[in-house]
Image (cartoon, rainbow, N blue to C red):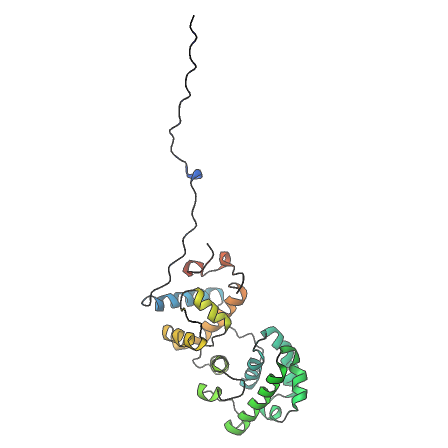
Amino acid sequence: MPTKKPAKPLRRTTSRTATSRTVKSPSRPKRPTKAELPAHARTILRELKKDYPVAICELTHDSPFQLLAATILSAQCTDARVNMVTPSLFAAYPTAATLAVADISHVENLVRSTGFYGTKAKNLIGMANAVMTRFGGEVPTAIEDLVTLPGVGRKTANVLRSVAFGLPGLPVDTHVLRLSKRLGITKDGDPVKVELQLNALLPPKEWGEFSLRMILHGRRICDARKPRCAECRLATLCPSRSV
């Protein structure tokens, strides 16, 4: 009696389920066009305000003179380190008049831990002398005057204008420079050019606090080496984010 061949197994024709599909991460947004930049910058500012409602300068100071001295010391140094040094410096030299006649070796010893202490001590005393002899003992407010002081460039001048005097000023430090490029606001690496580009995109009253918020975000989230994109409120706006 002939044997029956075993029946062939039926082929499944079911479609792929959702669980078998590869889920793609959202693609990075494109860099904004020139026409889109003003809206892009304002959106970034609005989002930064949510994480940093109070824009603060992390250099401890009680007067424009103290902020100016602290900012000079902050070159190539952290604000935390500067804040460890300035109490002793300001206790010894609380005003421009007292610092102008200081012994440079004593100032060097006080600021040694901030690095480049020889140059910084010379600039501090030179700044104090200029404030006394050319500006009647008062720190000037005009950027054209501030940048004539020893140790003061546009970044420091803009810190003084925006933080100490409440005037329009947008300091561009390494954090602002880095984030501006990552977020697609600019491709430029020159701080002065970036400052002018940002100034053109934002209202003058927002310049200083925009800079402070970018600095805070750069320190806390958008690190130079390992940006924490998964925690970043700006990730959906950032053409450089990790996917």
